[in-house]
Length: 68
Image (spheres, rainbow, N blue to C red):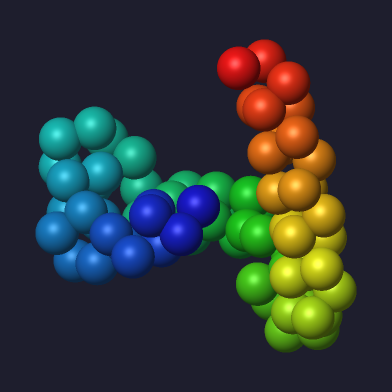
């Protein structure tokens, strides 16, 4: 989703309108429909996310070591 948002400039919208026959309104409607809800809220708990990722890293490292 982030990739689409960053590309959504005049060039991309021109391509949609001219080459693919998709209206600008449809593109923005699609972006709004499929937008990441966490990106909008701004209520991301980075500390909790880091703890979760560290736990997951420990788990997958153990799984990798078992398979080796």
